[in-house]
Length: 116
Image (cartoon, rainbow, N blue to C red; front, side, top):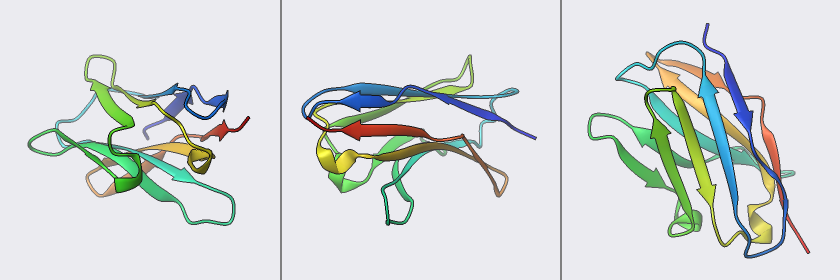
């Protein structure tokens, strides 16, 4: 069983920045795909960014391109989401996700609120 622990999040004004972190227990596998999802009130959970696969490329949903950056530290089996120029519509609970051999593992979620 893999456990994911998230940190970061909080309240920030529009235009501000936050950094989320997620650490998975155990060692990283070369087939892992690391993803950040978010879920706003009354909306479905949606993927925001992921990194992994053969070419280890980062991919983003259009609404965050140029503002969010996903990165990974293989040595610590951690991945991060740097969020810049935050907007009120980015307000949501953010979840980290690990996909490995057809199974999904989830972090506990962390609230991000963008408001004046």
